Length: 200
Image (tube, rainbow, N blue to C red; front, side, top):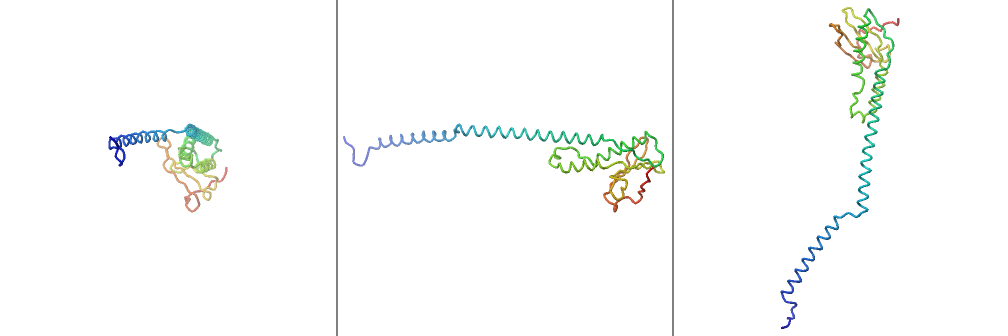
């Protein structure tokens, strides 16, 4: 029994084709597994990059913590800085004067000092300018009104009309309470009834 000249029998061809198909499947799986496996030098480079990124993140947070601490120290120092003696126009008992001055300083801090939020880290120029503004703003004089109310004027100098300034109105009922606040940056919008007292 011999082979025909047309090639191997169909049974043998099917075995060979099946063998080739099986070998192709195994080869494809091996290639896929090989492609997914990272060479040792690539694994080392990726680990080093991840470690460097983590170290940079920790360093960045350390710098932010230092900046926040410094800002907190500067703000506390500005708050605790001694005030010059304040001129009082009219008669006001010492205890009432201290209470009015305390309320005035608290109001100035509210309007001038930054709130020390995390976003302030991105705007350090604004924070520094706010601190400078607060440190330069001093209570200039306290004026007792005929109705018993008190006005406190603050600014960078006694010429608050031209330099810009702040005014706080207080009424005693029975403790002193803030009943009004105003701020102006130029003489065009300054209150018209301001009378700067002569120095004692």
